[in-house]
Image (cartoon, rainbow, N blue to C red; front, side, top):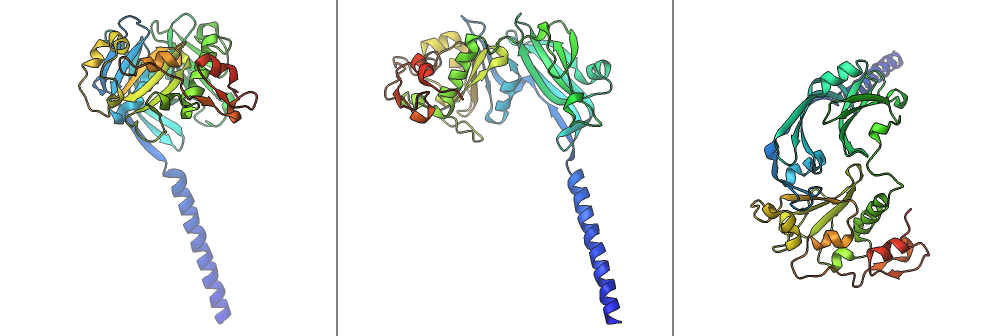
Amino acid sequence: MMNKKKIILCVCAALLLISLIAAGVWRRLNKDVISVSRKDEFSDFLHVEQGAADPKMSCIVTSQDNWNLANQVIPGKFIYLKDMEFKRERAYVKSFDSAKLTVHDFSSQEKYKTIDVKELVEKEAPDKIWNAHVGTFINKNGEAYFDFLLEDPKDPYDSEKKQVLYVNISTDESMLLEKGEKSEKINPLVTKADEMYKNMNGIEALFSKDEIGLLEQNGFSYFNENDKLDMGEIWVYPEKPFGSIGVQLAKATLPKENNKLYGEFPRLKDYEGKENDIVTLYLAGNSSPEDILSLLTEAGKEVTYDRCVLSAENSIDGQEHAIHSFDEYLQWKEFK
């Protein structure tokens, strides 16, 4: 009798455990169904300025909390703001209540147009859903585009069912292509065959982790990828879709006097904000390290390669090399 009771108790306990596990799995699978709301304001951009001598050069300032807004700039052309409400399940979007992008002209800062992405996707690809990521690039003709990755809402994991909706920001012309499909209209501004592409790769490698000590020798340090840019840190990165090089630093790191920087951005010198506000400069894609650092050093100070060394593990011949110029770095650097 006791054995029968024990068996019944064990079975009940097992069933209870299975129920708890099942409930836990269900909660884990569904706890990521969340509502997402995002509404940017143009006032979040604390300072916007186009290059005085070179209109392809641009500058913005944002707060430390909003420095990701630098990703919503098409240098020298447009700034876009998001106004979106949608539901996301785990990594995938389930539905949109609204999805609009308001585009501002970079030079005048005036509102240029609003694009209703939800409405556009429902018109061009009613069986697909946008993944909420905004892609931007400039094509070979200098035209700015949005690109929106569309997925099958029933099977968002299937890459073969993904499509990309391209929208010309100026003309509103849209084009729906299979993911990976090519078109002359969307030929990128910079390709792997271009010298600018190679220059950008060199810039990225040189400044990442301050590989040869160039930043240190000129009084700076590299961005260590924590939550904020500290005084003296500089983050240099290629913006290949725009043929630009991005440079980010805290306002406190700006030089007090620099004719080259403030000749290009005179209003930046008078900008009064917090010391930890983030300044983002967009420079030409063929800029050299000297071009970049000469904008950031105090007047009268020369950019130097003194004591810059490329380690044996990063050189093409396995030997250590003293580096005296960017050309020497490109000559000996092993790009993996």
